[in-house]
Image (cartoon, rainbow, N blue to C red):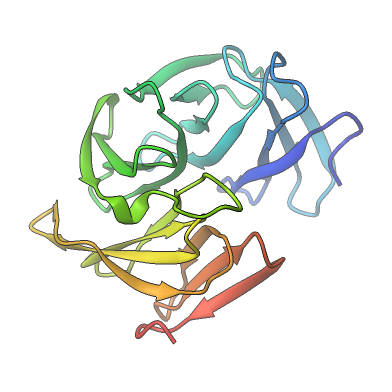
Length: 228
């Protein structure tokens, strides 16, 4: 249970010791700093820290491969921050260009490259392991919301185990988009699955089944390799 005064939990990850790290999404206090909340592996509250320079609306969170740095997607700040998990001190790791920039989901390939969804600009951005200025890895109307329930398009994303494709949830359109990977570059995107009610966070398990949080249906959907 998050401590009193916390906003809605959004991104979650674990460290090598099994401790949990959660960032929050606060609609009600846009001027406040975003929070990082830490729990032990058995769910006991450890600490809550403000993240310096962050907006109140934080997205995905993960420890970077190789460096062990904690990276936090700052949706409201149009950036990714490298955060000290003890103090909340931060530095800008990636800045997302565009007036409507809305970074949300984050994942990594086996080379350590970083991929970020942009919920309003219909884009998956890519940087190398050291961050910096991102480039559009794929940009398509399939990642833009055309729904009336939410304007959020591209959200959660995950590579399959062989990294032959990247899968991206479009929350507003209730679809999952499959983007083939051809020599490291994006191939032609296609609608892979429809009628997932608000796809959000996702990951592949050991058997290459895709687990998807359907945030408009209060459920988790599990799909096999064929999308069934």
